[in-house]
Image 1: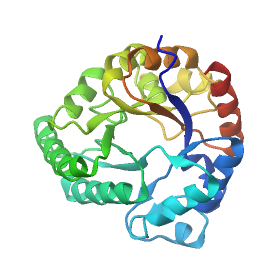
Image 2: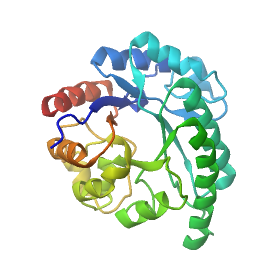
Image 3: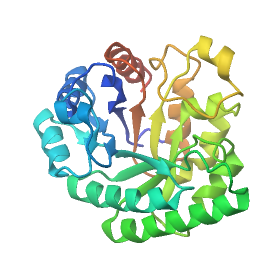
Image 4: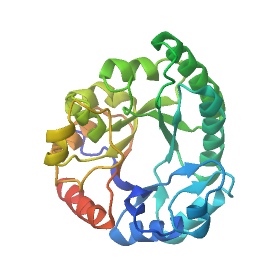
Length: 278
């Protein structure tokens, strides 16, 4: 095991989704809990909840330095941006990803994370992969000169298997395209998350640390391709010590474990557990 491998603990901002608070409040809360990294979610346009300070997402029409200022003030860094958009729908995905990349470059986030998204019901698989290749290549051409990495996440119909995720991530030949592995989604899709993580470790750019409760596992495993958030790390089925060993043994770059849970209380338990196994 490479004990010098740098693994840091961060958190996806969805942990304050139900707290009805602003992005800045959520960043301060993450720092208060002891997290060193946050993963903000960005969106297009304007909507009431974020503008009123009742939701954590930040519009890409806003000043990207808003993200940086909030993190600087709280003493945390960004592990990446949650910029999920359907790669299979280039009329959405191309411009969304390009704007997210420019936003990431300006605010200091090294990675943007996305997935193929739900497909159109009238396209074939072959057509979908052509559309995804176009979207990813357009995004890569903007990301490469800015040094921003793209993390493809296992989340939807094609990325629910190791072969499917590999196929998507290799569509566009670019050094900036890698994997944002999600421990919970991979488990729920019916796969072995540890074998899958070992398979993609050399291409890993970010990791969603998502645990799955025993109850959710018993009712949904093999029936869904993912889930928005998990339970607290350590409360579910994922063996975090094993995940850490795989990343330390096989991943060549520093990695942030970005916790994906649904409440502040779960975020507090998650960091305590991850610190204990790290």
